[in-house]
Length: 445
Image (cartoon, rainbow, N blue to C red):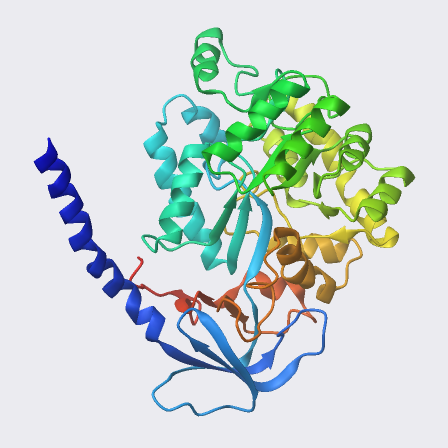
């Protein structure tokens, strides 16, 4: 036994230099990006004819003009608009894009199938220009393992900030037993750690997500569109349960996101001290007062209700789901417009997984259509999203010392926001994953 342990340790030690050698080219690489237009900090004036110098995985300098750095790889983006990598604050990387196919295969797919699907979805997301995402619930083991594999440079994908499982009350949005037959519900119950009843039990569920590896906590304050249980989108979790989740998460230094559609649930979650409201579909004057008072962010996910309603029209939802999709689709954009006028802080998020992966940037068009200036929409997906993640020191702008997460589009997204739906160039941590609109193989592919 001792010999086997020593042999395993020796094998691990001998593997370490190989891993270091794999990582070293990126650590030593020097790249110069010649940018015709540079949006270094969205919301501030653009720079014309500038150079971004990247050393390893970090941005080293931003210089005026097209710099000549001996020995550096030169990337010619003189006819493009260069900007920070985008951040989507609300995705679900697991699951098939087609809701009808998802329902047909629901009881046929194993966890291993889900893992491969999540990997492909992560790759689509990166190719769309999103270099960081916040995954807010799904199969926790799958997403946490994918996060760790990407961080270890085993696979290409966006940086993932994971909530593990969404904390939910019994029967609430996030209870995996909802609408399932008794046999499947019984199996689901053996794996549940996210479902709770009462404040103390919700503390336990929060701690279980943190113990599993969650970097942020998400809880369901209200009903949800895709949970297969009737009852609408009103408040489900009690006020004391919300406060228990928030206070427990804060003791571990975790931010808290609340899934919330109904106005009473939104307002209760804001009073409980959450850092962001996800969806925020139904609002009133008190909602906007609480947003301003608490400084919480609103993550609108406008793509989701439209996508869910469209799925319902083609028979992909149950009757209970379809009625909720109809209600959400009819009010989401109205609340977004009111939030802009009220001066609420907004961070970009799509709820991708409800809408197809890789099409995250379509959210920008809906944001602009409903009253947000293109510059503010881009800022929501960079500067503001980085602030909500507490990662402003490393992402969100193009500046010395920050991660070299950089994208480019062929046109001017400030004049035509839909340019962001066709990203030509993607660099993450100094590695070029896409150029000329084509995916590039790297040492992590």
